Image 1: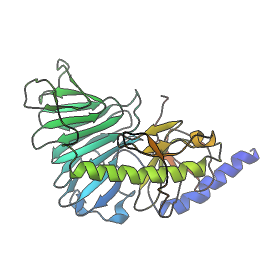
Image 2: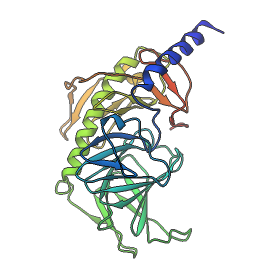
Image 3: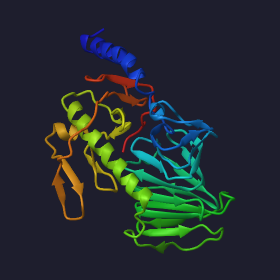
Image 4: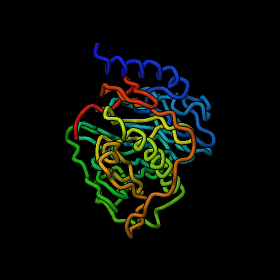
Length: 314
């Protein structure tokens, strides 16, 4: 066996033991952050549950006075407000479907592939997320909002093949009354509530963790995209395969290849241009790739395969 392959295998084997102490391989449905009272199937979650709890089909996560963040496909985050219940329908990478039973949820989509089918079920309808952006859902009044992005909404409870979707674009919302209606515009600034602000803060934290890990892996040619463990309170962050991708809140997610090629690291986009990144990374990092769709070695925290990384090209 060539020396390089032996080294890569050794790093992966050694780091796997340390990695198991921190988190499981990330797959759709993995709990990435909790605060306040959050339960899965009635079991109370704590900080040690982050990265180690994964929703299986038909299982539900519920918040009372707390909030929670779950991973869907790489680059897609599901965030729950208070008094909210979400059921996992399908955790597959090519068919990722959740049902918002009650309450409110935001979905941040930083990268989506044409092989992805990402569905959010609600009372009186179902939404398919089509582009990068930010999507808000309220089960209590059956309303969907698109801050940025694009989705197709299938109205009604009978989602047969003859149901035609209603396309909702950025800056528009749709009330699912059970009858087909037209999307209406809404004021984005007025819609920035507590859940929106919390989602923005989580996106900022994950962006900081991304910068740290992207710079670390920039020196190694055997990088593979996917979820990377960044430690508490960050959980998993996401490293794209190439380039610079920005969250709908304006925070950058950088590929190590982008930084290796001399790409500039920016700060927050506030509508008036990008500012140099000055946030710095806080906290310990136990890095490691946790994708199942790629094979290879990495230094630092090591490579961890078999976890549910994305398969496919852009």
